[in-house]
Structures are given as C-alpha cells and as structure tokens.
Image (tube, rainbow over all chains, first blue to last red; front, side, top):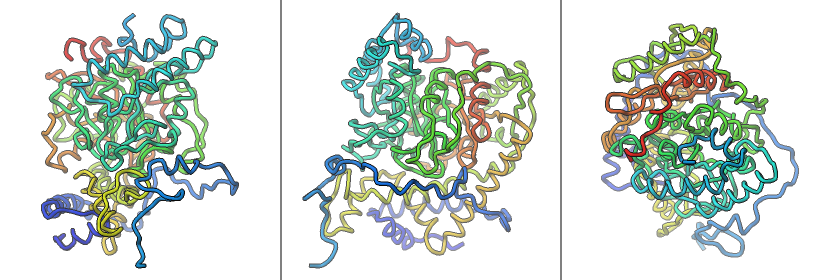
Length: 97
Length: 486
C-alpha cells in the first residue's frame, strides 16, 4: 500500500474540517503511519467469502409509529446555542449576497 | 454509623430500616468528596445542591413506605452521560458549558428508582483513552497510588467508587472503558451486552461498540445498579426488546458444573507475571467452587486491536462531525463558515483529532475497502470465535488487563503503547457478549488486579453469579484502599 504523505494528511484534515498546525501535521503523519502499519497485519488473513459485521447484535429496520409527539420546547433547544435570533440558530452567511 | 464504609447493599438495608437517611448518606459522600477529591480529582462537577434536594425527596418516598431498589442511594455519573441541568462535557473543551435539556435514558431510569446523583465524573475526552490523561480538564489519580492512572476512559467513576466518594457509578465501555479502570482501581465493573441499556442521551463515540456499564464496590452493588438501569427504550434503535430477568435473585453463589473456558491467547508475552499468577489462582478458585475448567482458543484475538482501531475511529469521525459550533458548545468565529467550523474544531484534544484523522482516512474514497471494509470482515471472524467458544463453555475467564495501573505520563506520548492497555477487553466489544472485571488480588506494589469474566449474548446473570461466587471467597477487608493511605 502506498505510504501516507503530508499532502494526504492535509487532505484528510480538510475533509474532517480540522485546522492543524504544521507541527500537528508532521506528528499525525508519523503516528497515523505507525497505526496503519500495525493494521497491515490484517492483510495476512484470507477474507474471501467472509461477510462484514457492521453491528455487534444485528437488528434491522426499527421504525417508530408515524405519529406526532411532543418535542423539546424551542427555548430548551436553543438554550445552548452560541448565537440565536428569532427562534433560530444564527450562523455566518454561507451564500454570497 | 460510618456511612462511607457501608457498601450500596448495606446502605439500602440501613435506609429501609430507618437507621439512616438519604440526606445523611448524601452529605457523607459530599463531605468525603471535599476531603479526598482535591487529590484524586474524580469529579468534573459535583451537583451538591441538586443531590441534597433529590435525597430529601427520596427520604419522603421512604417515609411513605415506598420500596424502590435504589431509593436514596447516592451515585456518580460519567460525564459522557447527559443529566438535565448539570454540565455534560464528555471531558471535552468543545462541550464546555453545555447543559443538556434532558436526562439520558439511564439517568431517567435511575432517578425514577430514587437514586441521588452526586455529580459527573472525569473521562478521557469523548471516552477515547485508557487513563483519563486525555481529559480536556485534568487527570484523575488512582486512589491506591496517586502517582498512577485510574485507567480509562471511565477512570473518574472507578476512582470515585474505589475512594468511597460514591456508592456506585455509571460509566461507558466502548473498548474496555469500564472493565479496565475497574481492574486498575480494585472495584467491580460490568459491561452489559450491546443494546441492553439504551444509549439515548449518551454522547456517541463509536455507535456499534458503545454501551453503558456500571461500577460497584461489590458484585451485588453492581448488580443492583445494572438491574435498575436496564430495559428497552424505543428512542435507541439498537436497544434490545428482551425480557429483563431478576439479576439479584440470580446471585446464588452456586456455580457447580459451570463450564469455564480459559483462552490460551490471553496468557501471552507482555502480561505481568503477578497478573498471570493472580488470575490463574482465581480460576483455580472457581474450580474449587465446582466449576469445570476447560482450555479454549479464540484464534483471532491478535487481530482485535487493529480491527478496533480502524472501526472505532471510523465511527467516531462520523459521530464527531456534529461538533461544529452551530447549535451548542463554544464557537470560534473565523473569516467564513468553513473557517469557523475548522477553528471551533481545533478545541478537540490531540487524541480525538488523531482518531478523527484516522477514521476519516479509513473511510475515504480509495481506502475504504482496504481498511474499514477489511476490519468489518475480520470483526466477523472475531465474533465467530466467541460463538464457537460458547458452544463449549458458559463463561470465559482471563485477565482484564495485561498489567496493573501504570504511572501517570508513562504512556502519554505513545498512542500505540496506550492502546495495548485494552488488548484483553476490546474483543468483547467487537462481539455480541457481555463481560465484567472483579478484583482478584494485588501485585507486590499493592496495586489491584482484575479477573475478567466474559459471557455470551444477554448472559449477564451467569457472569455476575460467577463473580459473586468468587467474591465470597476473597478477603473483603482489603478490597478498597485504606483511609489512612489517602
């Protein structure tokens, strides 16, 4: 498998919306490489025909009734908001005016 | 009556008989916290006013003749579990100041049962760690030796119970975060079957592995808390809709004919000799009690650690995407929305960022099959190992950890070495079983050692009774650190 590069680290950081310092980038490059090298031990297994297990105990399609129920009051919902206005979370504009 | 010396079961009796009150027991715990927690640092928040109100309410219910199992019993809650009106930080600066508008399912259940919540205990940030050193606030110290870690991530809860600053406590166990600190602190720690206890209101780390667990000074104490916390909840789609047995009645102490499997893969190089000796002696004790000991094999054990460290970070990277400073927590404003999100997320600590990076990589286009996809397949092999083992035995017995508590700072700069602390616990999280750690002696430094008992899906009654039977044979006096030592 190809080696992780500093450019990869920058790309992953952007995908994960993490702002890293130059020192962090170099540190993570080294540490992630070590963990991925360690994980390479999984390549020695023949996994032909083995199904994946995304869950511990498999359950499927747990649905609730389609009924209206009370939810949290708006003031409780907004209680922790860093900024709010008119009963809404206030953020910076994301579209050009 | 020295209230701090009573265990939960003894306190219940004393409360029922009117020999003490919940307010008195709660005050005794709060006093003990003031006295001890400057050094141990197990609590992030002590909710003393709320606790005393809840205690007064419980005393009224007791006076009215109500008999609820945890009525008036003061407990601690890991700070990754939401409790209405008290800060819940998950040990992270990114949730500093967050006050949940609701109780987690498990807190709801315990409040209904009449438990008193003393406060919120320290944890590695988002439960990612094995020592509490990754907490965004401070490191908890092991009550047996203040220069050592209490284990993690539920280290605050384990230390609080060991140092008699709570009669019992809730934790969460994603890769060993209840059993490993229980082992390091010399208390009992139970990790129920995935889905036994609703995760509703529990800050998500790795959703296919997370499960609420509990700590007690004794097996019976732990069982009482488990009994009250378990049950179906439709707000968690992975909650198991299964009958809840009477686990306390199941504690008979009779394990004659029980088949106990000892996996060769758990007695490997790197395990401390004193740990191996104590665990083997405990297994011999089970045999004396009438259990039948059988050697077994869990052949894919060595792959559990790499599988876990691909699956857990992958799930974490998705779960932690919600921390963007929009709806709760602090917001750091930058030039535009993306910059704000990135700068806010810089509040994550180094281990959390490391795991988000690892998980994002393992899930990214081009690498998904090679890492995450492969890990999910090996997870099937690990699950199958347990399935095959439980065809032959009822319980698996092994060490909880390869070592006793390590020194604060000893592994902090070496993530891989830190991850090894969970090598014996995380296979269980990948499978569908349940497990616990029960104290089984001390090393020559006076540090506690834990015996891990693993059961099949929903077989908590079996492992609790096995631990209970074993516990009756050990000297109770030395189970908790001496007062004088602290």
